[in-house]
Amino acid sequence: MKNILKFLFTVLSVVLVFSSCVKYEAGPSITIYTKKFRITGEWEKELYYSSAGEEYETDGIQKMEIYRDGVITYFEDSTEITGNWEFIKDKEEIYITNDLFNPTSYKTFKIKKLRNKEMLLEDEFGESRRFFK
Image 1 (cartoon, rainbow, N blue to C red):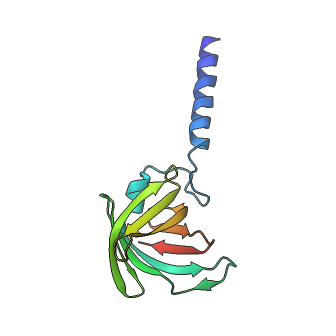
Image 2: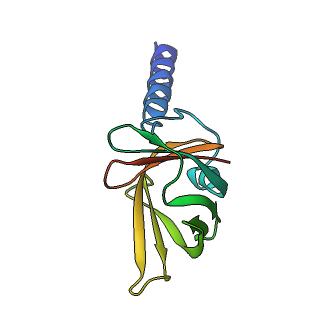
Image 3: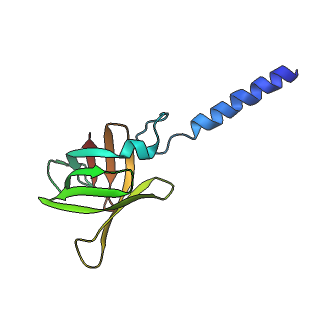
């Protein structure tokens, strides 16, 4: 009887842990890489989606390099901008700041998908950007 209870407790624990692993709407459900590891690197934007779901090829940030130490360099409309980034709202959003404009400007994106080689970010207007490494 004691072994059965231990087994049931173990199974229930594993189910609860893995069912709570899905952080972003579009997965992945389970990964061995941390969110910081997955988000750092060189990203290029493939597509831009309007809030109505229409696809565009150019808008805003085209290419960005995200570093582990919280620094970000990105190209927006042919201008290279350096700033800082951090996770906010329990790592469900990314907050990007820069000192190009006075006062410091910022952008906040909801992370819809964060895989090792693919990322989907949504701005406050419901417009999405798909990036690939």
